[in-house]
Image (cartoon, rainbow, N blue to C red; front, top):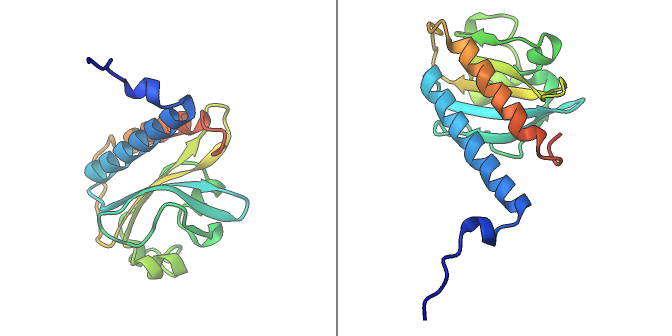
Length: 166
């Protein structure tokens, strides 16, 4: 007896399809971020009033930052994006006195940082898209900032549709 072809769309409800699409989209974006920056960690974090919460992480460097991890927002480099919501690139954290003494830098051996704010389509600041590495990375690509901002905008749109995240 022939069995009718069952599509993934028919088997999964809309919330399950949305969650799978979100995971696939954010994972792909994070992999692309590591490729274009040359850095070996990329993550998406949500800001609360006091915390930095990892929504998604791509960590082939094994820095130890995982989805669901929470840090005090003020100790993170991403906290700067909350104060001044524009792209931040730090090629040598160890040589920048504003950031080198932060506990998070020592804990995860961060030498390079690239971050852009993630805004939801309604204008609210959601969090940050960031890339980290234990090596010094020179940010020479003149299109890097614009590319990361576009990725952050896409992430904001993806997360805006998920009521659990915004």
